Length: 113
Image 1: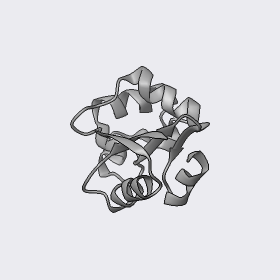
Image 2 (image 1 turned 90 degrees about the vertical axis):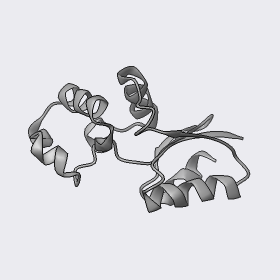
Image 3 (image 1 turned 135 degrees about the vertical axis):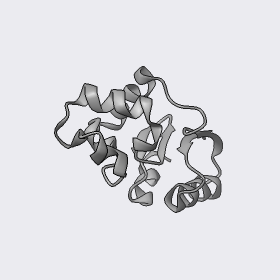
C-alpha cells in the first residue's frame, strides 16, 4: 500500500502518524508541507476527497488564524490564507488509494489503510 503524508516533523501527532503508517507496512511519501507548500487546487482536492470542509482543515489554534480574522471568513478566504501561510493547515493529512484523512485523532488513518 502507498500512502502520502503532509507532515510537519515538529508536530508529535504528525510524527506518531508517520510511525503508524510505517508500522502498517505502507510505502510512505513524506511531504513537509511547510517546505513544499500545496497548490490551492491540490489542498481543495484533498479536503473534498476527505469529505471535510476547508474550515475543518484550518488550524484554529494557530495565532495567525486569529490575527487574520479567519473565524468568520468564507471557505475561499480561508483557503487563500492557508496557501499563503501553510502553518494554518491542520496536520497531518494522509492519502491512500482508499481516501484522505486528517489524522486527528491518529486512529482515523486506520480507516484508509
